Image (cartoon, rainbow, N blue to C red):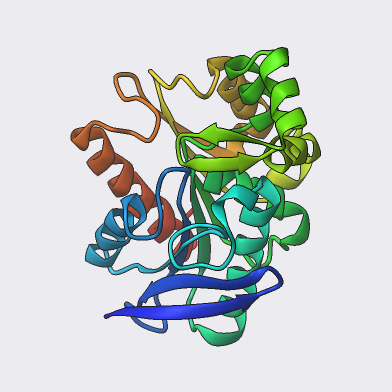
Length: 252
């Protein structure tokens, strides 16, 4: 059953859909990327998980879909707080055996930002699908200093999703690097697209070297950001299932 939820958080209500596969099943919280919502790619992920007997809660991040907030006000911090609010709700209201976080691109950046407030005893594993590891560096690769200056002076820019306030850029200064010491406390699975224009291979290499045996890295050489090739997406979901089930059965 796909149950609609309204989750109260510090930044307003977050809309979610919960698929229950049973009290003693692992549960995955799914955070979408930019350009999506809980009923685009996240729904597809949830349907795969359901077929594997894994419960899920997919959410609209703040400013997206049916959640509170305006898109123009989104930041990595609002994504982080969307995740933290959902996590708090799950701990208080939903029975599960093990709990996992799954973040795509921007949603994964929100998860990385939230780790400073998450206990490793709460989360059994982290799953990242083309997560932006350094949003500030990405912005500087994509925009000139003059464009960023104009953004600041105008207060907003015309983004492909709509008007986006300068606070989106300014907030990125709070997340200049991954907290590897905290990330080492979690088992992680990272999916990288070999033709991803948003994430540098050097950033992924650093992630691999810093996390060592705490990270499983899977690369799809021919896919672009988001894992666009169906065969690769299918494989990603099988590997996600294996990762979750191995941890849930205490074999990883």
